[in-house]
Image 1: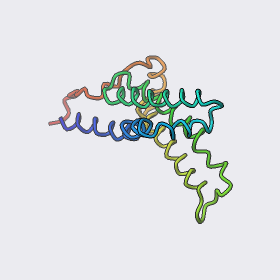
Image 2: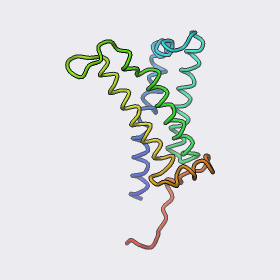
Image 3: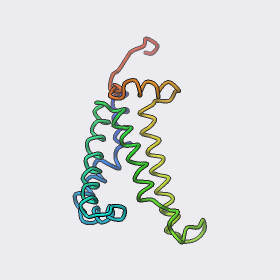
Length: 158
């Protein structure tokens, strides 16, 4: 029972940024979210579509990871989402005040960029596992579940 609880808790921590917080923020601050998307979208309609797609990805993929249903594919999609949002909205290299010492909005954006990359890496560990065979396993069956809540007794413990 402890292993199931721990697995669920770790998965909750992994998706916590997206569900409930980022998804809820998109609902509560809709105009600001569309405004942020409009920074990279050429039209208001496309910005709205991007926010709706982001909301769907955050909710559906997070639930897939929590339930273990096609969780590898869901984690791959969320990793990709983290990478895309880092490149589109965490462009520290465009800040004229980016420097390593003193007050710098560019450096703050740089840390956000790195956090997105780190979160993407966490999702990719769920996708591929921790060994070299994980990429092949994922490519052979991307809809497979990791079966996160299966407790298998291998006969080695008490």
